[in-house]
Image 1: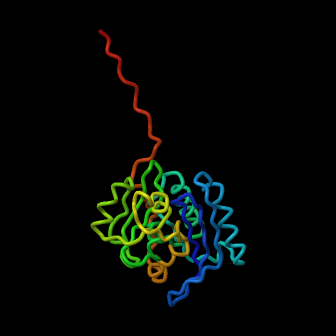
Image 2: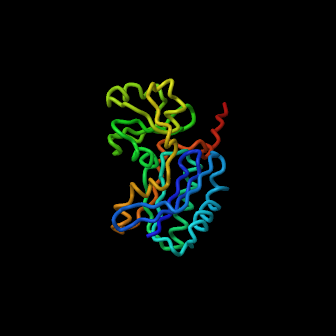
Image 3: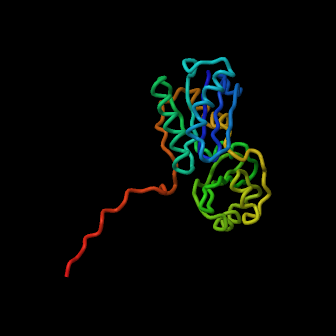
Length: 224
């Protein structure tokens, strides 16, 4: 079956078209990635078109859609999930959401910290044991993670957040993958996809409130 996967939870806009066999084997047919935290909206649709064209497929050939649900900054994440939901509705495809950190953590070994850049000098993070998440996701300043790293006896770090704050986190950094690979999103979700489980709502993991908010009503003026 052909599965389209996408992720916009980091500075990268990433799309992959994957062939998923009945035995669980995954064959990426085409991939696209563009790193620019302000270009998700401009890059996503052309990337979807490009991976389909490269594989000689059409939207009607798709049988499922997998999307990274974050954690990630509000605007970029919203672009990806809104696009995925719209495509799924128009093509009548089942959708499956995956924590974006899991796509990185699935490749980790031993006890590992996976972290991506959350801006504001913070990181989105989770702890993995041999590829399985067992703590998180959460958002914190890198220095606040030192007790967590010690408590869980973390031996390595993965992701752009660990690389950026390596001097603070004091962990050996595995520099690939730095960002979620959409093909690995399918790897995490494959049992649900193969079982043709009911479609899931793509609920974003923001972990904090967006920067923009509705203005408060004007204060009443008290006259003497």
